[in-house]
Image 1 (spheres, helix red, strand yellow):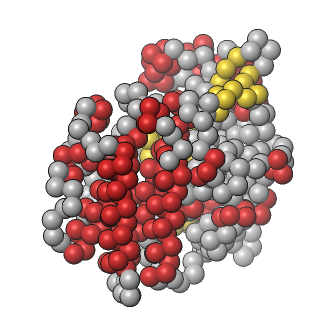
Image 2 (tube, rainbow, N blue to C red):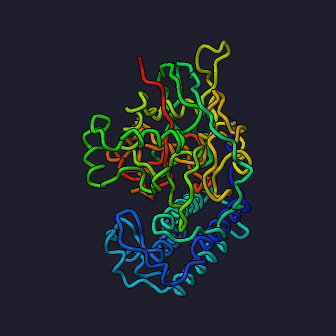
Image 3 (cartoon, rainbow, N blue to C red):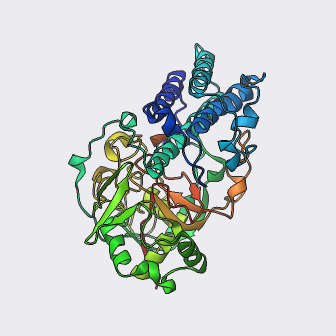
Length: 440
């Protein structure tokens, strides 16, 4: 991996400004009545989301670096996600929309003022990047929140809402990934690392076959049409219980029309695109599909090996090199991935061939998050990072690992070692999956 390039003041200013503008673009077009999303397990009130993101800059950047009191005196009681129970967020006496926006502008000004004329230390860089990445995570949450509430697509937030040139079709078949020694986890040269990625450690990998692309909507439709949601033998015990409780016969965003399938896309219902990856499916649904298809989900070790690994000199075993992105170490997301909301939605699974990994896997970054078969646990030698002590540790053992990022994931979070983690029942996120050949 190439040496670490430290972010400059100009880099950080650009990142903070861009994050603030993207959050505004995801919400400013909504009327006041549309901000009142219903109380649901995986949603948050939009005004609470906006205040929470701003509070994070104040608490985890300004106060951690410089000390002092909070501008929002009761900020912890309003916006600290570990102090405020989820259901209580709908009952809080939050600042109104103008007050929330004024709070955001004030904190933005203070953050930028702090940067002015100052070369950041490594500690500064960590806290700036922590706050910016956190805001980018909530931007993706705002996008899928708008999807599931049925609000219109936030066109102003997209880099360019045009996908007509990306009708590339399917990409069937497997690639073979050699066995050998692989370093799972983050390099110490990475410019920013989350505690659950630390540190890269050697693990032996058995050779395996993995799909060149994620499972498509048409492939998943065959499972649905074959009664897959009504065959308990295809589901784990927990998965079957979840499916019955959720009363699902198909992915949550699909709509039958008597002949084929449509899907809900924000406030529209559109024909199901056969070559797009299947999306809005839980881990349980992905696991059931694999049983039906005689396949399996990859472990996160296999996923990262296929995305970041290199062939050895003789082609028989893994090489020692490792890539930060499937295509190499350059941050070229805008032209070879579907992420950062650049294209306004999903594209065909065969699009973006220049983003292939060395083994020939496509779209391992972008389009849809990919479920793995791995439970979310710490790597050997794990140490909780301060100040965001709650980022990883509370969720170990209760969630599944996802890799790769979606079309709505900002590029700062779209790299090979990034570990996302959701409960296996989550089907509201931009999540799909790719499969591996079953072991013999």
